[in-house]
Length: 300
Figure 1 (spheres, helix red, strand yellow):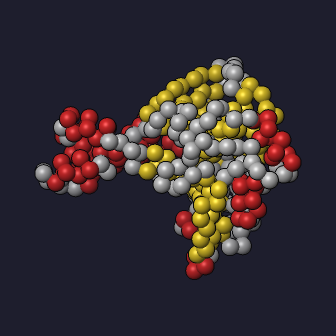
Figure 2: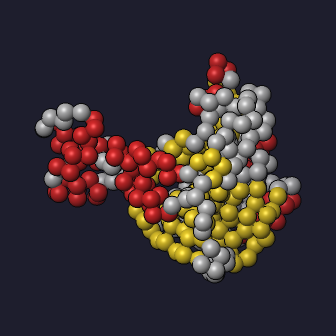
């Protein structure tokens, strides 16, 4: 049955599996965390974008750099002209997100039939006892995609509370929700305006319990458009993603009535690219990360 989603065009490691170096057999393998622990690596990554640009590499070859730890100093010495030229050629984007599922074929069926994604490729790695599937709304070299991981013999994961949801832009939220219901999907919020706004949204869950927000929009080049994380210190999170990954703060909104603040960050406009949505809930400084989500990877 055709999906109602019609795309017009189309590492942050959290916790382990055998693939990521932490056994999943223990039910207590997850720990308490705050995303801001990642801020400790900011000094090593402040030049993330410049170090990966052709212009910076050429500039670096013209003068010695004593150690990798001096990358920030080297970046500061880069000429203003080179920085401005690099910005013009900046092609950074969100590449993919990785998470684990207990039944790969079931999840592929749900994403393709209910959410309109395409199965881009699938690979089995028997020597490491896992299988991957890549799904999205367009080719991997130009679109944000989902990488699903199935670890042999593991059929259930703890999603935790730190990772919130993914956002998918659709032209008709109500129609999409009806299709999902017809396929046996779970709707956790019926279509309606977002609190304090006019955008029509709905929330659904996939067979493993991962949440998706459906956002009603016109045609967009990037239907898989959002990743939401919960953070314990919003300002520090913003600083980290600006310095470590060169993201731009697109907007910030406080909702005192509902006791939360959000910040949207990314490499381009919300209606044309993938963005990160960071949510700070008043008074909450840490979250349970679980063992389901693996990483979000930006491409520099």
